[in-house]
Image 1 (spheres, rainbow, N blue to C red):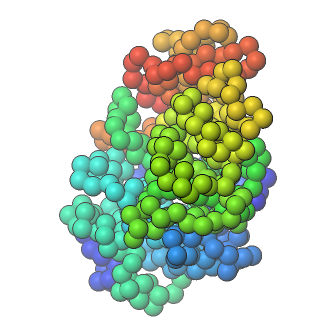
Image 2: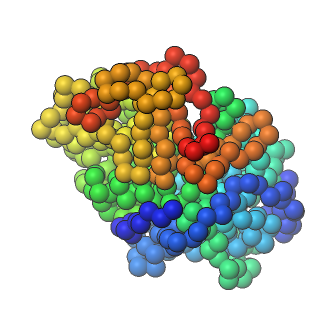
Image 3: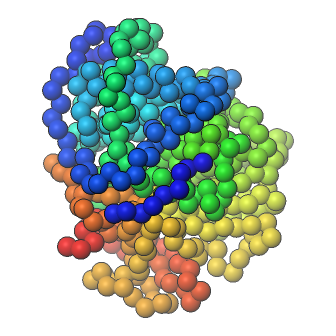
Length: 437
């Protein structure tokens, strides 16, 4: 379980060469390190207690907590020896989930910032990621390495020569170098929003979001299921939810086109994006291969009423949680439970803010509007991204105070204290701005 939180303020590894001098990035946060727990530290604590437990089940292959911890430590040491400095962004673009998990853990242990990239990303999308993040190193697989050959230095995680070189080196005794209030992830947006190209989240925000999800939806010790290749936005909250509880991340195998479903325990939870889940519920295979009722969490934009209706038609006894996550698409702003006892509430679009998030409905001037009136939904708080990256020059817009993030969605407060979403805003959401300018 996640520990209780207190809110206080162009070479490969195989040639043995170093990454060279990496230009320092402005992604480090210089705040008091009052809470020691980090994402990689949380994983380490589980690995020490249950080294043989399965962290990832990918088709017929698996990765144990102990193996993941050992490999991540070796890779983190190699990253540091190779020149990765504190706060440096490192891209993780792997062909399977097991490699992606090891890569992310290694970057965090080395004190770097993970820049996860979906396995299917190609061409202009990769150019944008490099432009926004400024990353000069990538952890990849054999299938994804060709796309990075002329962009930045690549370390191939499924190449035996890579691990032969890493295993021959002694672990760095200074690891881990991660900090609770240091950046953990940089999530690059598909398009700019008034100059903002990506969002930074620290370890604290992830821990707060995990703690809140466990309190409301329950422990994921039986595992969490995802049905897509690595590493999409919904993969990250699903993965860390499972790891926080010592559970298994169940994923399909890439060798079956990411269509082969694993066979997790009946009580394993499932995490999807609303659109992804809507397509899955329309699949003809559900009629011939019914699935057991299980807790389902949808993370992303507002969930259409048709998806909620279809969920309870297919799984009438399965609870459904809908988490609205704007900006980076992983950290929830509001949440709503749909239970089998009340699957069709009067206002399905209404939800409540999650702990660590302060939501406002504002007019075009940024002033709060009265209850019942419509405005754009904004939010701030320690459980949300603490800063953004400007695409034009890679400048970090982080402040010591949490920024106010715009959702690009209209909403209004209801008299019962819930927030009802009313559709997209008519103008693009503004860039994140300081809470106290």
